[in-house]
Image (cartoon, rainbow, N blue to C red; front, side):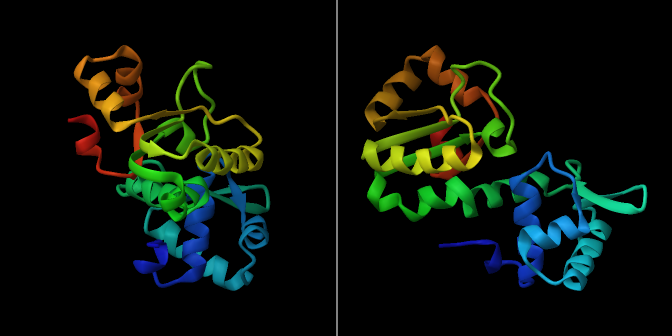
Length: 194
């Protein structure tokens, strides 16, 4: 399975990126980061300084502490968010269990799910899965993630024929899903929307 370690050699930097890009709304103090990723404080400080000078993180003094947060204006923000979505948490669980889930053509996460935001409406879809899916396996993986996040994850499963039919007919439900921000976990985005 591919992960950030394939392109980034510092394990501390990988842990920091995974922490920040898995929790985009969070602001962390140095010692909080050390506790979260279980690494030495000097290594964490060194990587934070590097990530801040490269423009990935923002440093903000508050009182006698310095807090760090993600800079959404960083030029590779979207790409890093996508990589972390695929290599951690639910994305990784789905990819690791792909054979158990069935013959999956596409798995798409909504931008709101990846960013940790609440759905605007109760019927908004967090995950779209297209293919011949073993529903109990998929449900088990999603239930485990729901318990970690303490929130319900709304997902829709369609066979490839149904997906193609609905897309051809310009089904409002499917077009609503496809028109939102999304992150491809399995499959190619161009094939999904063509």
